Image (tube, rainbow over all chains, first blue to last red; front, side, top):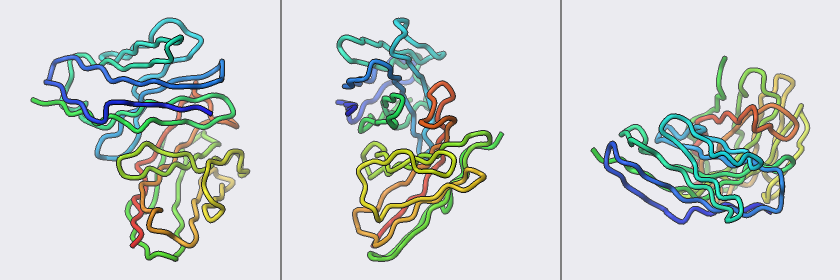
Length: 113
Length: 116
């Protein structure tokens, strides 16, 4: 079974600053993917960034980047130049072929003006 | 290209009643997954349908059932509602028998179910 753990229930950051959200996971699969999703008050899950486990290079998407530590089973999200629109719940999730998306409990991020 | 649409957006039901939630998948997607998200929690996998057949199920009792139609839209049915069924129900569509992360998952905005 796969598990995903997010140990930071809430975080806050000043606008334009950088913040890092933590995630650890456990899986026995060799082929898996990791994701960060954003859930704003509109409730829709929006994909922020995706990492294939077989890729050593950390994924980046504009202001969002990850620190993927495969041996430590760690997958943190860094948000640079934080904006008010980044305020949301952030969920870390894992996926393997033949298994569904497994989500962590989420981190509530507040960006403060 | 349309996204995932869920209806209704909010619903209040009485304990013991039955409810049907609906989901229209994104154009071109043939897989639909349903998730239950309790307040303050991450989404939990209920089940998944691929080409009208259930091909995956989470740890939910049989009173949670579903359907997928030829146009790949889907329904989630819950019988004998319990207070703990109160949650946000999310639908996600994707492409491929088990969801293909290369294509991504598209989520709807969910149905907020309250059982009183």
